[in-house]
Length: 357
Length: 264
Image 1 (cartoon, rainbow over the protein chains, first blue to last red):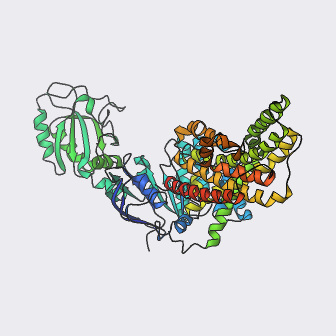
Image 2 (image 1 turned 180 degrees about the vertical axis):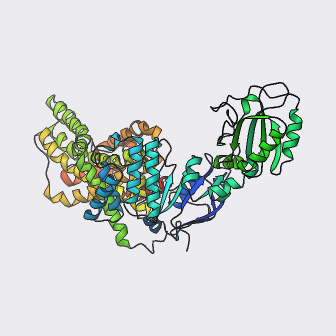
């Protein structure tokens, strides 16, 4: 099966700029796939979408939608694709319903068919009640829904969504993702850009991470997070035996297979507090009073709780029992456990860095 | 640009649908359109012909000379503004045009569609001006023999107006929209031989030369030649050739500007 969307060695340099906005980008999206294009602001995502949707002329390389070369035959490409842009570009001289019917008319649908399709889509997107008001009255979420309905009016083979959920409330967001899944089930290929890593991890079949116009990684979200397994973390808070030394405890823990290194953690840096983005606490309070344990207040040789962070090369849960065994053998009392697995966001930060754009 | 796999009929259907969208929107807001088109010339006619006439400053002959000029001005400016203002907004703040840019037709045809609407609206404006003029002035000059010339001149003049609108609409950045009025529209209005016949400028040769650079001059002169042929005017065929040349020049600049805004 040929790809529904493909770019090969795509280069875009805007006039009067020194760097390429898109720099030798190559990827392909299979039919029926939901493909996410992730990247910091200015990474070249929107330019790439612009080239694929005929609005940006490539400096070099090829771009295909539905097998059609968008540069050589933009008119054919426009019949196969639809775009839902980041901000509203609805026609404010028309009502919501007319936005749909005129869009279908541009794409050659006759009056009966476009009216029927508009009615069905307005109903499906929960806009039937407000189909004949002014577009200006629409909230951001409603405008977004209407733009997706509009995109579906001419039954495109490929749907491009640019930052589809930015600025939406949780209800609209869930609704949107339901619709996107439905479209996928109908066989529509979906290419989206997003900043929301959880969303990308949950919704997309594959993601391409782009920065400075180049592709840094391309795989399924789970494969990408697996690639960061060295960054899984197991954090334990203990009440050590009075005569034991933290250095010796660490030395003992590092001897466990799978633990790459270990360190003591200062109070404010524990996973339970503010910790690396996306690293979720999954387990808490084994030996303590049951409720959410208070964060450790000291880390050192004195009394009180001691928090140790172990960097592990496998799923932290599999190392829990050997760690507990070692600690128990030294008379330490376990009061809190946190496990952190890398998320797509960690992959993203790992690849694109922390600096602001 | 190849369009091998899309039949021409599909592109024409898209063109017609986009054209229909603009006509539909004009019809929907016809009163707004009417006010926009008729109010300024109405006041001009009233003050320059009626009020000054009542005071004895101008003659009735001047009123009959002014009306064709005002018809030319109205048609020209209506066409120009039909394209320029909406285009500046649609390409920047509202981005409304994007849905049409993604319709299955070559991008340049959307610019041509804008010109077609401009011509239609300009002609409607001209048509409205005659009865309005007659109403204000009490009578309107009428010359059935000049009908052919009148129609051809107005179509060409509206085309030039629209093409200048397309040029301005794609060249003027949105934050400079007020410049359109002050720096471009005002000189255009007053150097276009609308309020005076070009031949009457014999005593002001430098200004006579200045007006020759304004395409509106040729439209005003042609309309006057068609409606009040007894007043000395530039030979009509020269006017028509000048309008065609300006139309070609501004259409090519305007379409290029449109393409640059539509495809980055």
